[in-house]
Image (cartoon, rainbow, N blue to C red; front, side, top):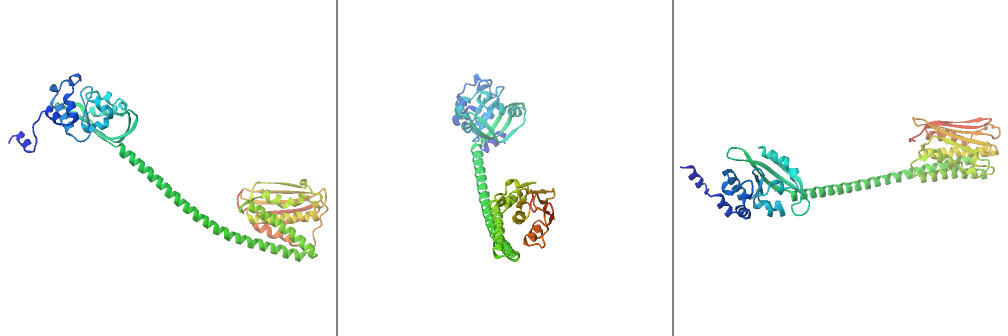
Length: 399
């Protein structure tokens, strides 16, 4: 059996290029009708078998294929390739590649050279900006540049077997953006839910904290009233002393409310405690000097120090530096790098100091109760020149 007979048994029928082109679609007829003598390839009758076979295979394929052959890389393409060319499909046949794809020539030239050197080029979803329909558009392509050889094995052109993936890439990008937006919304919802849980937890903690603080405040008020009554010489004196101390406690509470019960600046605590004595008879703002490192006190420390300063100022107004026009009080504090806290109250210019015969609630408050808030110790020193109060401890929070 001859080889040609075997081919016919498989369904192959011998046919010339012209017959194949005449029976093909639009591009088959256009290739057949084109005047190839005006191109470097010359008339169709002079084409070598390798060129004629490649054009036959090109036209018969349903896959978009472009073919560039000869020294000028003259253009061929099939019907499926027409949408890829867009408006330029009407004039591209028989033109050099550099003219057909002038807008992307610099992008594809390295790959063209690779294909013409005998190597296959493969690209997936390669972006190209082109002007194929009268306007600039971003496009994406998956393609292969395959070298085509002649009868002697020399590369004389290449096939561009291509699929435009612009729609798929755009759709995938839109889907990714939608997924990202959805993920962001989910994260936002999760965060909102977490924020709500945290807010509810803070609310519960706040309620417990307010209850605790109220109990502490009531206990402090009870102690103030009880101790004021116990050490007073009369009911009237007890009422006045207790009222003054409760007012001092109230000022400390007001200051803590303004700071949200988080922390209070030391200077603000001291200034609020001595404020009533700026307006008393014979008193002026020049009676006090304040100075110290910037620092914060916890709510408990703030109330304790405020009450201590109130007691010191009250005693100074009765017996010490604030009882005379010449008296002065220096209030200073320092904070160490280890958050150690040193507070000093120093009176001068008042009458000679005589140590008390017995110590009342005010003394115990300043020397014993207040230092516990600072995990430290305190001392009242009744120097003849003026009372000195020293407090040493540690701040519970930083500066």
